[in-house]
Image 1 (cartoon, helix red, strand yellow):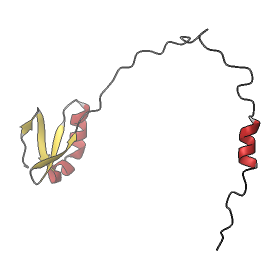
Image 2 (cartoon, one colour):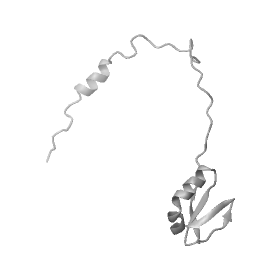
Image 3 (spheres, rainbow, N blue to C red):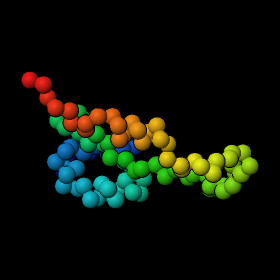
Image 4 (cartoon, rainbow, N blue to C red):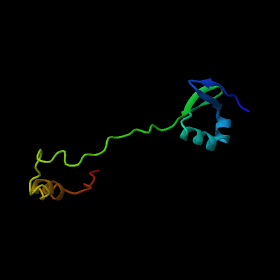
Length: 96
């Protein structure tokens, strides 16, 4: 078996052993156990569980009465249309 040592409560495995046991290490991470992966005895990576952050529930209607969307908010803006349509050729000719 490869080199295994405890550091911050985690096992340390060399790259070859981690590769051979990758599926097991992923299962261990899912249970909350992390693993340090070392190359030539030097720790280079950690396989750790993702944080399961709990977000507060969405409260709908919190902006009700605080903002107003104008009736013409999606009307075309002639200045922007002109910038696209009247700005010259897309690929100007090269001058040699």
